[in-house]
Image (tube, rainbow, N blue to C red; front, side, top):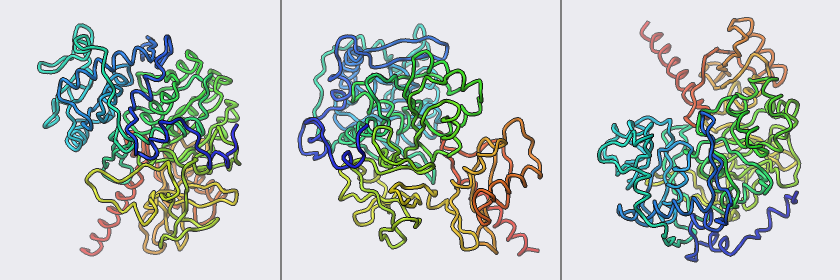
Length: 554
């Protein structure tokens, strides 16, 4: 294990990295970096598992061949350097072919999550001006409702099922084109991905990811995920989202490491099947996914105990109860990692670097980033003072975000990028997450982070999930209200609500416990599984306004 302090001050990468960081040389192509360089005879790029138990393996050479053919097809459709190619595809080989073909000709890949409906797809395609969209027979009907839809390529089912008149047939077209396609070399500043934010606080925004970000993705995969040559690796995140395409595809494949795709819904059964069948030792996912696994209890634990070497978590803060459960029941260390679509991962409990581990903390700055905590006047704060997490861009060579596409932002102030998240320094140099700035609750003069209250609630055996907000209150400014999803073994009743209130009060403080608890069947989330507390908060604000209006009229 490498020393954290030395890793944060040293960058020993190959010549292409120097070009990427400076952006001054025409020397980079993502398809070359993530595929061609590793296309040795028999070297596996993808382990694929279908929902029905079918499976296949594909080599880097397979991918190089097919990506070149599809790249030539794209060129024939008029796709040029900088044009957008969208993929509305499940986790399959065709998705990788589409991604790498776009990269090969200097085009920009735009992921579309398959759970999106037609309007969400239309917004993203129209915003990007994509020249081509590649889909499959299952998702093709959504595109029929998309206005001004670009050229469609469909991966058909058996005997061409799902190929609509006017569409191109994916595999039929591949057979028509040569496997020779010279890669277009770019600078580190040229874009290779077009992402949309996940929408945890409002409408999603588009942002371009430059080629130099591959260096940061590879660094995270090495230092935080600690991906080793002997590991069998599985990132369960969908490549329609940032964590999936950044670190489920780009990071590991840039290291020449095979990835795993499971083409099906995330369930207890499928998770156990894939871990056991492929001997997964290094697993990454989200707290939402891990809480689902914990619900499987002893039966799940017995089926995979001893199989995993390490586990990583990202997407939202990792509750301490999840950390303890994985240690006690699986005998494996799970670490929390923090990042954003705009940044990649910048704050981690690194599996591959030696530093203190603070239970419940988001971790330490990733090498190549200087993280600070700012007050409302943008002055840097010290230990124990809550403030906004920010990136000092003048001292963060790995920070690549330059703004949103066609949308102004207040995220840049002087030398800083403001994350919008409230955090605080710990004495050991780690940083703890308090909550989104908009989510932090002010009650009777105290500031309460919803994450702490949610974590305390989840420690109770009755609670599967919880979301905590500030409800408008004339006396306290806001009072703490919790929305709780119960385990099927428990019934929603006032006595249980009171027990949960006291449970939190004993663990935190008298001002932090939820004075109101509402039992719900589900919580509002983005398609990627992140809590949308602002929806619950807006509902409570609307109720308060409606009640006030009735009082006035009365």
